[in-house]
Length: 75
Image (cartoon, rainbow, N blue to C red; front, top):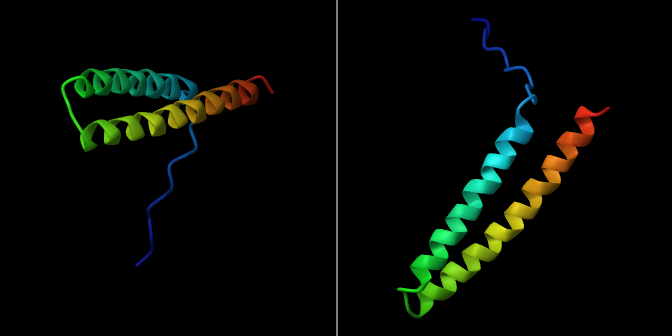
């Protein structure tokens, strides 16, 4: 039997748009977590803080990727 599966072409045309949406969603998740933290005590608050720190790092990475996409598009 031959393998007829073909890889999908690398379509990067809407990467920046997807990344911007990911930034927006992550910020919304951070804000929701902050609201939840107001009604939470103890270890749960610390877990939320730590997760939001990771979210901030993710946002920084997304923004760098957005800049990379813009640079690649302009080449």
